[in-house]
Length: 338
Image 1 (tube, rainbow, N blue to C red):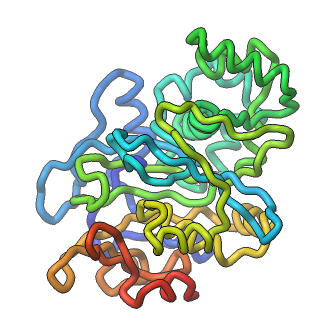
Image 2 (tube, rainbow, N blue to C red):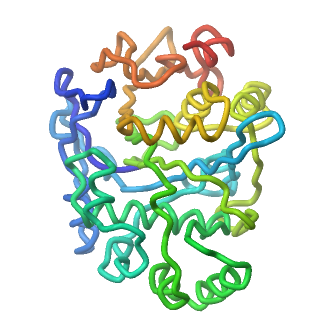
């Protein structure tokens, strides 16, 4: 989760399709440039009311991998190792940090569309073509590394086995795809949303990410094969089922996963999810943390405590820390409201 947002209350222009875009003090392109030169990204929001220095924002990408189940759409979730420094023990979508190499020139040989097209589909001027390429490649790479699924065109069982073997030898992701003549299927991976970790994060404090979320279908003929290092368990869950299991204490979810699953409960099919993704600009969520009734809470766009007054997603506009987890003010039913 990455990119550097500012803290102003009024600078959130509309994107023209009913989505609210956050204004960022530092762009993805600037952060990625720092990474490419082994420099630390910016560490403070320019317009932060406190003027304090916060953890560096780290670019990241994640993918909501979906399939049609017997009872409706299902989403792949993986459980992070309990000792992971980010969301340890939680169920998350496959994803992770963007590497500087993800945007390198050798990626061109394995792209299914020009860099300019990857940039344009993000509808965000803070991405130049290199940063846009990097976030797409990183999304596919992380899915392969964590879940063993290859989001590429024409992947056979033999090709997938070869990719796994080459990866074990330390060959870079783009290089190993190029060696086998494979191309990433980015056209089948539409951007869905963008989440920026707030200052004073309640979950995984000390880490801040600017993460682009993508949507993808389960690749035909492939099954998830976890790395057993970062990811130790996986489950295909219907969005409402994931929320029910979270509410019962069976699984742990971080706020972006909670709210993403809330959003997905509104779609009756994977086709409907993709129709939404392809017809709308990715919405940006920059949560605001505040004190509430003796505890801490997170406000989302549309909440009275958030500077962006227009909602960008369905469900509750705030989550409250109760015990050790985040909950809507009105209980489980608030997850399912429009």
